[in-house]
Amino acid sequence: MISGRKANFFDGFSSKIKGVKITEFPSILIGQLGKNEMYPDAISGTEIMEYCLLKIFEGQLRLGGRIIMLECKDIPYLIRLYEQFGFNVLEKDYEDGELLQMLKILEEDEIIESKEI
Image (cartoon, rainbow, N blue to C red):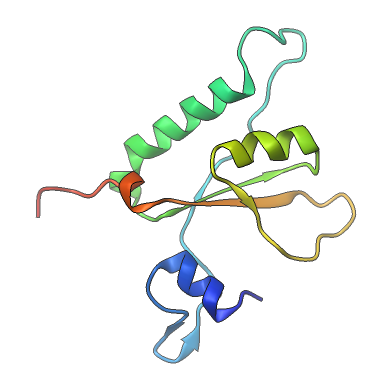
């Protein structure tokens, strides 16, 4: 369960809608990212994330939302990579072997708004 303060942070408005606590948030999910170990120097994890986020920002105008989510194994170098791009591990109790959930909340200057209304 997410606290009211955290819910307010995620949706940017309120932790309740019509008196009911918000427990779900629209988000963009980054699916599986990976590198072929046979070609370790062909592309870096940083380059993969830069490309991925570029595509998300290009589509964000149509998709909306301000949360980007991904799941990853509990491997320190992976966590550090995603943290470099502004992702944070969602604090919760994880089962053994469960993938960590990481979130990035788009800052105001990262959100693309339509000029046409």
